[in-house]
Each structure stands twice: as C-alpha cells, then as structure tokens.
Length: 541
Ligand SMILES: [Zn+2]
Image 1 (spheres, rainbow, N blue to C red):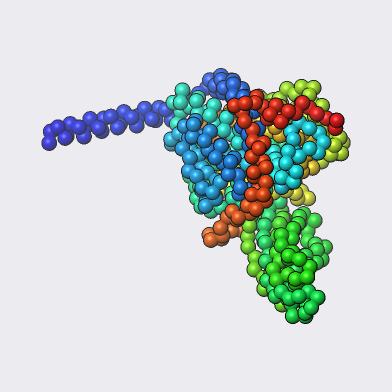
Image 2: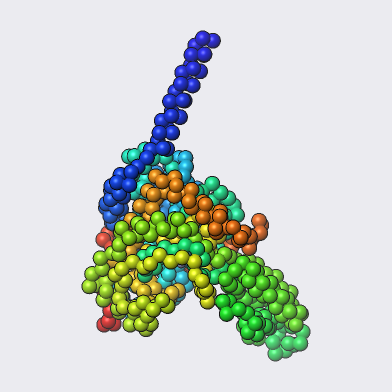
C-alpha cells in the first residue's frame, strides 16, 4: 500500500516536471536575431538537399501518371517519407493513391500539400524545344506537377531536423493533390475530416513566378459532371425508326448548352468532351456520355449553371425519349487565401530570391517561347523574354476578374488558413496543359526553381512553429475577414464517391511502354543523362 502511494506520488511529481518542461518548450521564445540565424541554417540545410530534390523531380516526371492512377508516384513518395521518419496512412478518402503522412507531436499542426498528376498526350523529352515525345500519345507532365512534392518534402525534412535539435513541439502533415486535373480529391479529404484539427496549410504550385497571394485570386470554381444517356439500339439503316439514340441526346444537350452561353456571365468557362459517342455508325448508339466542367466565379453562379446543365440534359432526354443520369466527378470552390500567411511566405521569398539561371537555362526558355509563339507580354503587361530574374509582387484580392482556371485547394482554403506558394520551376509564356509545358520540368530550371521553393517553404514553417501570433493572426483573418460573409457549402454530398475509375484505361494502355523510361538514379546522375539529351537542345537536328 505504502509502496503504491509512493509510486503514485513519484508519478505525480514526474508528471508535473514533464508538464513544466513541455510548457517551457512550447513557450521557448526566439528573438528576431535568433530566428534570422535559424533561417540561415534552414536555408543551408535545404540547399544541402539539392541532389535529393533533383532526383525526386526527375523520378516523378518519368512516372508520368494521370489523375487517380498515380500508383508508382505514390509508392515512391511514401517510401521516401517513411524512410525519413514520417508515419503514413495510405488510401485516405478511399482513394488508393492518396495518403496522409505525419511527423511530430502536439500543436501547431501544419499541413503541406502539392499535386502529383499529369496531363493526357503530353509526353515529351525534357530539355528539347521541339515535339519529341518519350512515348507517342502517352501522358506527360505538361503541368509540372512532378515538382511540388520535392518542394514540400525537403522543406519538411529540413524543418524536422531543426525541430529535433531545438526540441520544438508541433506536427507536420504531408499530403498529395491526387487527380488535381480532375479536381477529384481535395473536397473529399475535407468532407472526410482529414483537415479537421489542422491549424494552417501551405500548398505549392509550379509557376514561372516566385510569389504567393491572398484574398480572392480571381480564379473560378467548378463542378465536373458526366451526363449518361441510355436509349435503344437498332440497325441504323434497316430500322432506325425503332431506335432511341443516346448520341442524339448528347448532341442536343451540347446544342442547348451552346445556345445558353449567350445568356451566361462573361466570367463563365464551360467545356465538354464526348466520352462515349457510340460504337460504330451502323448501330444506333444505345449509350452515350458527355462530360462537362461548369466554371464560374462564385458558389451561387456555379450552382446556377450546374442546375441549368441538368435541365438541358433532361430536355435532351425528353426530345430523344432516352433516360439520363448524371454523376459528379470533381469539384473546386473559387479560391481565397490567407493574408498573414501569404505575407509571411512573401517575406521569406524575398530572402531567398530567384534562382541563378545560366546561359543554358535561358537558351532553353527562349527556344520554348519561340516554339509556342509566346506573347510578348503577360496579362499584367510584364515582358515575357527568357526566365524571370526578379520575384513577383505580393498580390491581394482582385477587384475584378474575367475568370480562369480552378484548383480544388480552394476547398481546403475555405476550411482552414491556407496559402499557395508559386515557385519558379517552369518557363513563362507557355499555354498550360500542353506537351511544351513539360519541356523544362526535368531540367535544371525545374531543379533550381523547386529548391528555392523548398527554402521559402522551410522558412515559413519555422515562422509557424516559433511564432504563435502568426497562427493566431491567420485564424483571425480566416474567421473575421474570409468567412465573415461567405460560408463554405460543399458541392459533394456525404455519399458521392471519389471518381477513382477515371484514367484507368488510358494509363493502362501506356504503362508498360512508360516503364522502360522510368528514371534510374542509381545509374544516372539526371534524367536528361539517362535519356541522352544534350541540355539544351533547341534546334531540331
Ligand atoms: Zn496544377
């Protein structure tokens, strides 16, 4: 009994001591001078990982996997994370290629994310400024999503080393934007609670610029919806009057939507592909499908267009006596990003500065700009000529926007303080979603741009883990400015499954051919070396 009492007492004393030391740990105050020195150390640690960054950028480039089919990419990245002490939960939100990796304990909890999927028919040899696919017709990194994971992972690993040394409490999460091109997962992660107890999120995206932004970024949100029509087949010459054509329904729906365009706001962007138009002309198609992206600037306008689309589809079904069903395949809200976090990131971007480009990098950039007939100036009126040599300004909410692209990072940004770091790993002036956008993505341009991105990310992590006021300010902006009048309403229901079947056939058709070109870092210094590309190759021999 006495012994028991003693042990309880000892336990209590020890527990109190532990609590006190934890408090001192949490309250450890750093002066600006301390932080500046720590940032310098972090920069050096990240710079010391330039080889690892290059290998990861090149490796993911070589896998060339489309949304929901990022099998090799996922296996590779999670193995790197596990080797570096992260615990990995695979298959989050019922998406086989998704994961959530975690290191550390306690608060704050900071999540780092970046996309990993590529673009159909964008296969291209890196470093070559004319069309030269690695595998003809295959997917390729014509968006540059092969570079973002290296940015966050090597920033996180450098920060983790520093946290261990300094005994800093806090948790780092690393997750992938699976199927971003299909805006296919981030709203699902949110719905399934993966961001519930997260204090802030840093997302990174490839760019020709080096900057961040806050507020309404001027982009559109969207719903991605497939409409399936079912009719009756018949001999198209013998007895066509006995058929109900599902393809007629698809065409009538498209005609209806294209007439509707006149009465939509100029900020609307909508586009479709016919994913099933029947099998052969002499069989009246009993099945046909069309896949739409309805984009607009606000939740209300996206919803209105989505509902109009359904009505038009119902009308087309009525006209053709077919049956119509529709399925949500993806969704993104319009973006809004956090001001205090963007300012902290921007201050670090200023410290890091642009990479040092050499003559070869500039020659490739100019070669690509000539190839794609790049405009002389960007939309802000800045010249497009080679690579950027200074960082961009920090931009706030746009007063007006004609609309544009979307990213489902917005669904996370409406649930917790979030920013997007744009790091300079690609050539300005390209078209986007095109094989020419892949040219720089496994060259020194992508390697150097990703490295500076990692440096700025690491320093912003240091700010978040050492300045409780930054996290508090970020939350204050989120609560009192961003969500003061706008409340997040998801477009997906609690039952909508992620569309993990997408791209299976396309990837399957090319996987064995692409496998022959997977990067082998044990044999080759770089992917350019493995492919035998002289950097840069600007003129066709
Ligand atoms: Zn992207």
